[in-house]
Amino acid sequence: MKKAVTALVLTTTLAAGIVMASGEPETSGVPNNTEITKNRFIQVQLLGVNDLHGQLNITRKFNQRDVGSVEYLAAYLRQKKAENKNTLLVHAGDMVGASAPVSSLLQDEPTITVLNTIGFDLGTPGNHEFDQGVKEMMRLIHGGFHSKTGFFDGAQFPYICANVIDIKTRKPLLPPYKIIRLNGISIGFIGIVLNETPTMVNLKGIKGVKFIDEVKAINKSVAQLKKQGVKAIVILAHNDGRQSTPNGAATGEIVKMAKRVDDEVDVMFAGHSHTYLNTEVDGKLLVQAYSYGTAFSAVNLEIDPVTKDIVNKKAEIVITYQDAIKPDKEIKDMVEMYEAEVASYVKEVVGTAANDISSNRNENGESALGNLIADSQRKVMNSDFSFMNPGGIRADLHKGEVTIEDLLTIQPFKRKLVKMTLTGGQIRSLLNQQWQPGKVRMLQVSGLKYTWDGTKPAGSKVYGVFSTDGTAIDPKARYTVTVNDYLADGGDNFTVLLKGTKRVIGPVDIDVFKTYVKQLKQPFTSSSEGRIKKIH
Image (cartoon, rainbow, N blue to C red; front, side, top):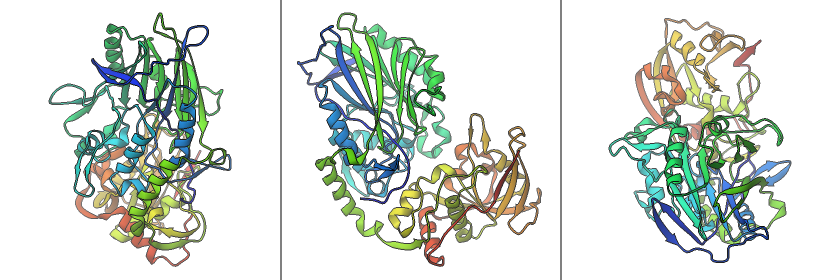
């Protein structure tokens, strides 16, 4: 339904009959035909998805085969669910945000409706659920009115999160945990989102809440669950974790957390890094299934009905290869309905790409697509330089006709541009802020070129900053700079931009990108040009 883009993901399906509680029980029908093995252990299956990002109709490539697109994900989940009546579908956040146009143009209501229809039982927010602010996130969860789409019923399954606190009430914004009972066996689920979320979203949208330490929040909820006699505990965590190979060592925040959380925790679903993870750390099973619906995690638990504890756990990461299953017709029909709603806008052709233009950054930190986007913002805003955050570039641009849908898939956030004035010294400081504790965020640049030294300490890596004409940047001189409003407000910890003066608010980035592509000589192209150069 959409030309391939490139990436990986995970997704899930769940069972109908359950009883849920968050302090007090909530009922919604319990299966009486619990499957018990000959050795009396109850078999429970958890199917997990993370980082779908509203990619309802996007096909990607994995091992040279088509993967993803929710009608295939749904087919896999429903097939897997049929193997065990005691199946729960869960997600670890970022189901919406940076979404494909088929979802984003309809306020991400299509994604929530698809999750409802597939039959998810439980989820936790990721950082991207906060992209449009707390109020909009709560509307998608609980239902409410939006001026563009009218009234929406919301999610038909609960969201939990233990570490986002309402400042006024001093209580969690969402229930911190849920107890799901399967024929007398209680399984406790705790949700968390990475506490660095405020550095990744517009701060105006999250006023009134604070993000606290994940491990402290988990252990507090574990203590409450233990008081209620719950011994089987699962964490839905929007925190990163990865393995480079199936047998490789696990790294990431979820690994550090696993060593610090209460040992009563049995399983931790991870997210955020869009990577593979399936291993055990400190007695906890850790899983993550890529992203964008290209995979899902299937966790199988054996629970002793006497001790009510998990005695065995294992998982597999299932890739959603399209050639191995028929798409789910119900979900396929839904997606086609949403595509029809937005078709008149997204199918407009704005140009022709002479070749594939990749968002992948080379060893220096530069990408061909990043250059194209940064150029569009600098030239339309008529500034000396521009800087584009890499997290705002979500897909590649493929050879052939380029539509609004393609541009929106690449830049889904619809950020306003901001033109400001910085000194040359501040620009150097901004570039040095790309190296932050535990992560590197390479800005895509236009109008300048620079060299960085990988052997130097953070804060001192950048030198040799020049305009593209070869003129050295004067530390005391003033220059005009264009960024999006996310960066302008200090997003991704680029705090130097908070010092920018003479701010002018410009148009939305996607409109600028569209205008720029239209005026290029067709067919157009872009390449890595050596704007960023690494030595040592």
